[in-house]
Length: 467
Image (cartoon, rainbow, N blue to C red; front, side, top):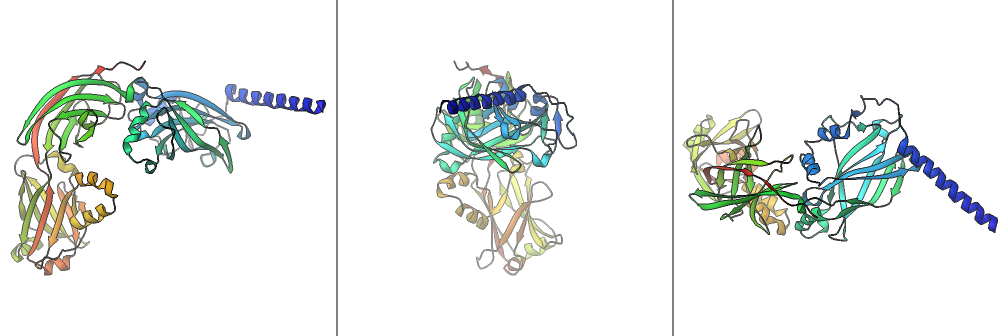
């Protein structure tokens, strides 16, 4: 009996010694084979690989600079596969999604079709809730076109883990996760060819230098005068996932602000809706890609409401002109003229709605303008859960309705943006329309624009780091 116990002890020591030998090989082995760069993207360094993904995760450099990207370096030997797995960096991005990078040791015989994979089933944030969330795992590819990435004979990957939102009642719960102390990756499986290896849960540090990744702010007190009333841009908060521009005196959720980031070389206009948090009303802006000392925005336009209506009866005379490709004026609203004509370019007759500025250039928001038939919008809204409909109503597009002389709706198949800017093409029931003239065309929910010229400039003051 004592001999049997002795054999067991010897076996344990031998197994442990073998483990140390193999683990030491993982740690200190120096592969010297040449990686085939026709099958793999070979990078000189991790920083070069991260730079190639900057368009996928634009705030990656900023995350490093403010301590939001945590380097964990969890090494997990995969003895049966003769490899190891290292989990490198992790951070929380929008709405509780987790960015994670990891790598496998590479073998000379590896080809893109037979590489090991890591499957992550769920995650749990420590310090906020004990609930586990199933995740959708999405790999982020570099700019090179999908070839596997290799750095110093290691296969590198980056994934985004999206928590299953159906498991929580309110999306606001995810806003708490950036302040979690750590994240636990659960139900981990490594697959190598046809074999699967289950791994223990992995707890990764998330401690950040700044609460909720908000690292700087600036007071503004910039007053704006408009025909609809006055409002004040009060302050700017700079964060990892977004910058927040706070506003007082503007509370209607249907209001829009059109802006430019004047610090960018090729700056372009963008539209932002009003949002609210426990600190007030704000518009969310793109985060900076790296730490900035100064900021500069230009506010071009404000859209206060979207309740304008134009209604036009198309007579037989109008219809005759439209068939000759001549424009019929529908009406004006908020400095814009709306017209309509018909075309047939070999794919059937289409109505074409065009928008022109009464004077000067059309508002920049028209680049994001969309027209949808009333019936299509009604059908789309009916498929949305009732508790989410208020949000979609705030995003309601311009609605198009067409009725024949008997007040019956003319079927509209679809609406698309035309080849010419500020034009919209409408596929419709041509036979019904042509036989139903005089017909009435209605455009509703039209936006009301007001031009403003506001410069928001200043210096950012860094917040104190977490202790």
